[in-house]
Length: 206
Length: 206
DNA sequence: GTCTATACTAAGATAGAC
DNA sequence: GTCTATCTTAGTATAGAC
Image (cartoon, each protein chain N blue to C red):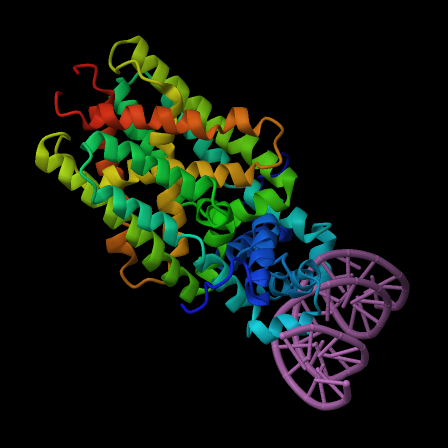
């Protein structure tokens, strides 16, 4: 909220960076404050000078990293593009957020942590899920209004749009150790197939 | 593989039952062997007489509970029903497996554990995901063959079928503490909307 | 703001009596 | 097969010097 004077400047940012890497790699429980300290190259007690608890550190790690994506989705919604183009670009953002970003690659950890730390779940829901769904709903509504999309039930429709990316993100993490990960869970192929099917479904011709 | 003489008979089964409840409620890391022992009403050392490690106990908990659903899906595939009816019943099974069963309600825990215990991930993938996808692929192929379904790209299609249920299961667990959980993430409504959209998408008329 | 040192707790697991 | 007792390790977090 105050200091973006330098890039990855302060010790605090350095801790967030290393801690995020560890949470992504090993999950919440298996990431100890000792390991974070070791990765940063300071003593454990120093971490506690910057963050009051492990929980607070984790929340801080998750909070950075989604804003860019929600903002990008809102920009698409507010653009003057054709609805099909909006949808295509929106899918790009959703898949990027869930499979490329560090926060997205924490999906299993996030899911598991959200219920154990209710405040975590609430924050994540309000600042990411709600934001993304709202922007996507706007894109769909505009397309239906203009006649570019068929008028369909939006409840299931939003699941058809978001869930494949969520599921793919999850499976890529769950089975990250598989040798044939990229053949079995290929982001670009799934996204392309997904988009084609959505456009067929949304086509007003039928 | 050997003993289904009585229902929930042995001490071993009792341990599995209580441990599963705890894993569902608190996740893997927060469920200690002490708590399992306490829930069963025995000493911790006794648990180790039945299971060599916490990891083995967890694997055993997950392994029981999915077989019924994969079998049910195969039965639907092998039935003589119309393709649309098969799909409808298949969705019932998928949503039940993911939102009603104890194993399904472990979805965040399972996701987080699968990558930390690669053997877990492999087992889960081979005995559940692969089985479910194979049966569903059979249902779709038969429908396309008979002309009841349009011939569509099966990669994205399988995501459109499974992922909404996966996502819903996940969110219901992540946000289980929300007061408006049932209004926000209603299983029956989502399932119905999901099915209607799938039938539209698969309609060969277009 | 970082260090050393340590308090405190609890985990997974084992030994050996009964 | 269950118990009591214990080993070993490691975690989160804090106190207080520098």
